[in-house]
Length: 340
Image (cartoon, rainbow, N blue to C red; front, side, top):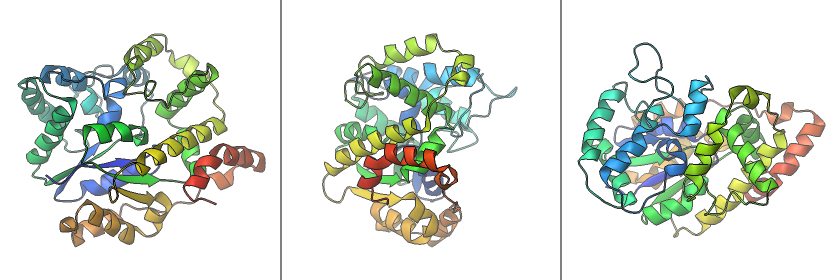
């Protein structure tokens, strides 16, 4: 297969839209939210058996369970809960939250078949198991290449480089002020920012590899412990100042940009969300040529560009004081990404 491509970003930056655009392509498999759905377990394990990977994908994370059982559903959640669903809110397999419903309406049968293939596998490296899953899905849908996109995947770049030495990256980014506003209205990011602010208050850097969610050895226990005492009422009462989201965005951007700078030449394509909305045809041409010029397709381009819907910036609606505070919080990342 073509060398793997990962769409990475801070989350709330337009990556979901780009993933939906990719899904329209007849030859490319669009894998959505695979790594984010695994949360603290995403990059744990050196040489696990297939049964372990099956259980990982079949088990809802403590955070996901807490959100869903309390009706705190996020936009990216695609599994159709209801009386006809096989799984209830607290038992949806991680891979069925978004990844498989993003590909087909027959997602439960697809998981049955993939489960059997995974459970038949012996021990292998984490990279080999994940490649197997993506390539199995690509073959199932008659695709020639797969592209994975997870929200808040920019911190995963060093792990992607380690697991997939031939990986390439599409970095989509958005004005930090609008990204922060969007994060402040999203349950996952509210919980994530709240956690990071607490760690920082205790002098713990959440961006260090040892502390990074998905790779940290103490991450699974920490996640279990936190959501063991989680209550929706207390969560809803919690106030998080908007600049906290700006600081979070800026930290992710600064570290992520440094990680991408370490990639070999020609392995990174940067796309500004606002430019993609304003000039979708040109930006999508850049994108598909980066993936592979053999995948250029006029019909796909027309279908994909129709998904771009320009919108006015939201940060301009804030009052002057809030605007100034948010701008100061986002300043390091804004400067780095070339925003005025």
